[in-house]
Amino acid sequence: MREVRAVLVGLVAGVVILPTPPAQAHAAHVHDLGLVHAAQARGTSVRGLGLVHAAQVHNSAVRGLGLVDAAQARNAPVHRLGPGRAGYGPRVVDAGQDCPARAVCGRMRVPLDRQHPGAGTTSVAFRLVYRRDRSRPAEGTLLPNPGGPGLAVIGHRDYAGKYRDLLATYDLLLVDPRGVGESDPLTCRSARGADLHASRARAVAAAAACAREIGPRRAYYTTAAVADDIDDVRARLGIDRLDLLGQSYGTQLMTVYAARHPRHVSSVVLSSAYPTRFDMLGRPAARAMRRAVRLLCDRSGGVCDGRDVLDDLAVVAERLDERPLRYGSRRAVLDETALAGTVYKLASGHAELFGRLPAALREAVHGDAGPLVALAEQVRPISGFSGGGVFSVPMFLTVSCNDNPVLWDRRASLVVRARQYEAALARVDRRDFRPFRPAAWIDGIADLGDLCIGWPGVRARPLPRLDRLPNVPVLVLSGELDTGTPTEEGVLAARPYRHARLLEVPSAGHVAEQDDRAAACVISLETRFIRRGRVSGQECLRRIPPVPVRSPSHSLL
Image (cartoon, rainbow, N blue to C red; front, side, top):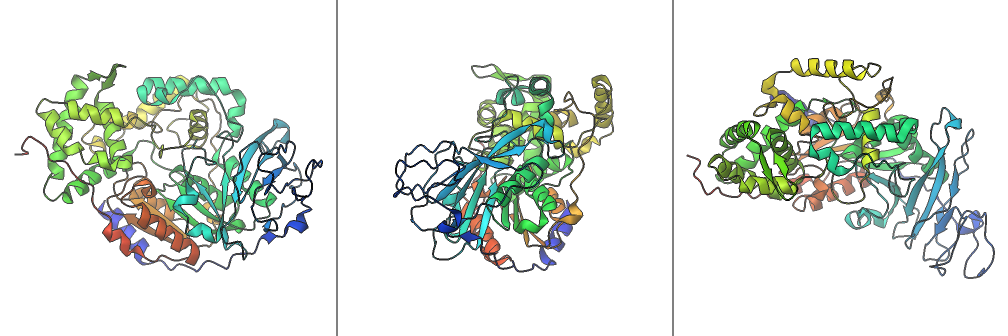
């Protein structure tokens, strides 16, 4: 990590950030849109207008209309609907969602494949929530995505509450990615969340079965397609530029959007970022895991020593490899792979539980595995799942298997792929994965390794052209304890941008905005950055408290 830290220090200290250009005024008045004011047109047919002013028609049926404008102010300005694009003409269809006050909601028809319009279409749902201060044009439009892939956005994430200060003067654009939530959900009965963390063999089989069930349509669900859908929504609403906020996988989506549509980006914030090409064997994650244990103990006030905890982890891992434990009503198994996955998830997404790990390992060394089993029972969400909301396993699999790098020839038969994957495993340095065996560590992380080895496909997806990224302010935030998207990968994610600033959040894991100890500081940093185009107020990082560490009942001596 010494070399990585040097890169990080140089990146944070030596980059000049350009100020964010003034936001373009993109509001239009109601009369420009040809709106029918519902207060004066009760019972009037309004089909084909595209918008209905619903200030006094809260529960009216508006089938066949493109959008529902629920702004409470009768003459409040709303975004102008831009024309459809030549060639395929994306159009707005019935909103089909409960639209809150001060918002415009709708769905757009978009092509499944923009290069081959004959492939058909799908719908993409959006919600544009207007700023609270309507006395002047919006300073910008925030577009967030929480990650996954496969997480719904509309109605399932409290961006309006968490970013309340920013949204006084910024509009908020929520878009459910194709195949998720309100956007024509992709389905397959062959794969459920339980399949992906039950065992590696079950996860691989479920992924392959899901691919067969979805059929050829699976090829159209990619990060690039989602990015282009978002841009269609932006264009249709007449928004000039977006302030991008990506979390976890959302950082991939925002980087791909910025590369494909650079003229429509004002600023970029990437929280828990990783590069577009990453290590499918999880070596950066293993390094981050060891570092997280050491940092946890360094700040424990002497409750634990990182070297001792890693030694205990090695002992328990070896025991569980030889004699796995069965537990719970479902007869779940805690073996070395499950232990690796548990430690990985504790550090990244369960800080309050991570502080119990040293004591649980010490108890297990002395023959009481109960506390360790209790931790394993509590951290069973899918790898990369950042918590809360509606999660789509089919979309997680399609995007992961279409877009992620692989360790085999995609054109090869399954037998040849398996042989190539085994050869890649045989070449690794076992020390990179200590205290676990390489296979145990890799198999403990759902979206790495051979998850997609049975996924049909004959060609690799082209990499986005990162040389076309916009010259705008970029902030990358990495949690110090994050094993899923460690700081090492945050450095690589920031590198293609010309004006990037990386901040490491102390004692925080994956997506620090979700950690109660760090959230207020991180969100305030992001808000200032989006407004000003530069980092300020980072003193709050020093006030984030460390993770409390539970004392073991057995001596470490």
